[in-house]
Amino acid sequence: MIKAIPFDFPYDGRLMPQHTALLVIDLQEDFLSPTGYFARKGYD
Image 1 (spheres, rainbow, N blue to C red):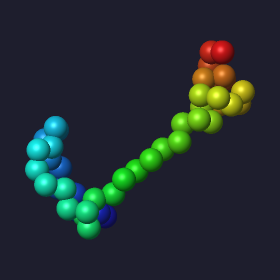
Image 2: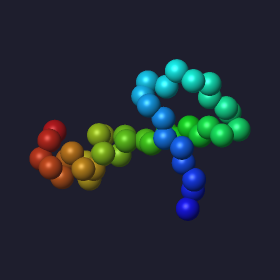
Image 3: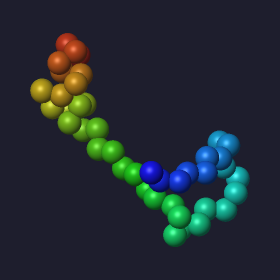
Image 4: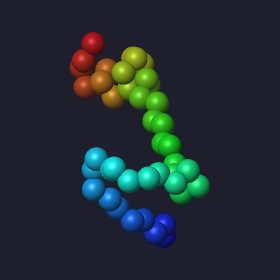
């Protein structure tokens, strides 16, 4: 279990780099692929 301390948004406090992570999620498969989520839902 990871201990988390949530905060209000927008956050006006100081970010501490040693306690901060950047999460990047690549959604190109769902938007561009003919086998992605949107294609399976019938969108073109």
